[in-house]
Length: 278
Image 1 (cartoon, rainbow, N blue to C red):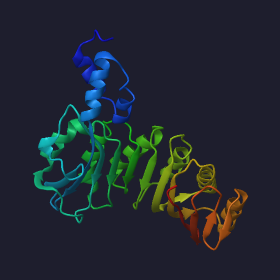
Image 2: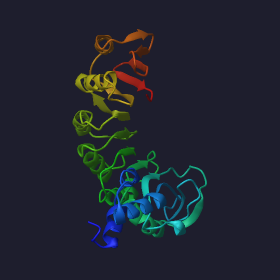
Image 3: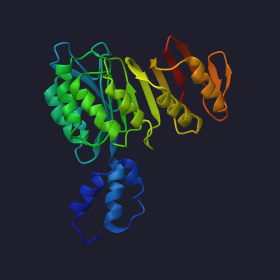
Image 4: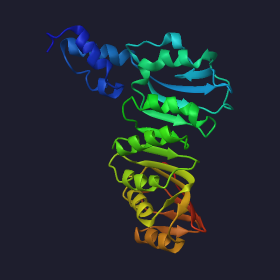
């Protein structure tokens, strides 16, 4: 295999995430040398963007505040997390840049983005539409955090939830349509799912959905669960199910051996339920 051109190996290893590069370090010859070079020089960065009120200029943080756009290296650098922040969020590292120019400079690295977050509803549906169209071109995501930001946003979330690769889903406020109930019922049964945060008065979970989540928590398949939603059943049925799983309870806290505590308030078919990180 060492007979293949160096540029070929360069291109192959340039497509791999750093964790896969690390498993390639034992390779010999040209393969091992190229893998070692990419592993040593690879930077996997996070990009936080805040736009001005008129949406024309942006400020951003790239990496740990020590990487500028001019420092980005197409061969080695990858953006693995993208966050669009509220207007109100802190003054950031570089400011007053054209957002279009910024996006052009980071587009090559965004091909590897795995996590994306859209904070609150600070930006309009019309403004957010191009973002979701752009992100839908890239690979499947491991984590998505968003409010309901319109049709393109919903299409994006549906695609990611149905991909089988999404590990964390955070749905914040908004008028999520009823069809998301069925989508979430299917999503929480996928093998890679391990974290759900859902805060929306437009979503109603049935007993099957909530019991599936709690069973995954009880069997150690769930890392974090946070619900702030309506349900279609009563408190007594849920408490009985938790006791059936082997939980002990004291006031609003339920405990199960080897699992993080579950805290729950339940009023008028509105549930607030939270399981901390394991």
